[in-house]
Image (cartoon, rainbow, N blue to C red; front, top):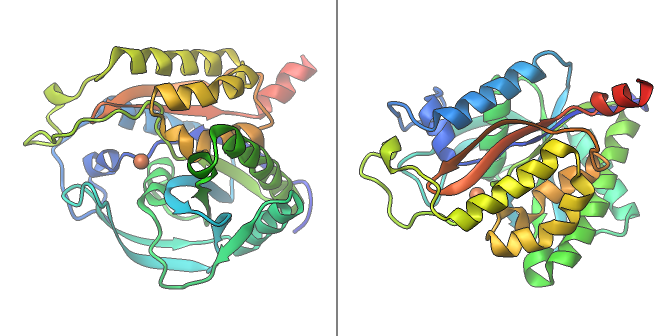
Length: 302
Ligand SMILES: [Fe+2]
């Protein structure tokens, strides 16, 4: 299978384990009464929208697989195990069983190297897949019937600077796009991160008690609205320029590079991103956003 592959959708797909907990899938040991409906129904809208398109792989960039030496990709055909959230083991104890598109992972690895990036394949069959990867993939496509590619979050933003991190993500996004096209895949890309990330320090007695869930900081909320406004207007190059400030001032989880990677892979959408939902989880700002690259083509043809 070579050539003519394409990215059929990109999504900002945040990974609070609370959302999986509240969905009560059979894989998760903890059971909830309800909770975080706005975001969960936003994911449902994303799923309904994706159901109208064919895709054969999910590619996720996850802030919770942190690597220092380069960018890593899962490199074993399947992984199975129990994923436990280190902060919320009471909410997320998820039995996963997933398949990996190793050929595409290797193609991204090679394209990344050609871009001058340090790339590595994770070949340990006992590796425990991070909960960011699992949560974003589950909420986007709970059937688990397509393989995934998971890319680690290189810590260049933290060890060097936001500008160094952005340059790396620019190259990694280009490499991802080229690999998808060259291997003939129809790919859905997931940036597994929240927006603003100032969170509560005490958990309510009942985690899904929504009377305890609210925006914690107005300044952070204003930043989230600024980011979503730029996305809705299709002004993603301006968003790119503002991301380093957003990351610092909103303590954003975008510091792990997932959104930057997605914007680059989508070649900086100049068409509106569709915001399916915005809501808080333990006070952090989360949005479910979808980009449909076919829209750019439509607008060009019109
Ligand atoms: Fe996180």
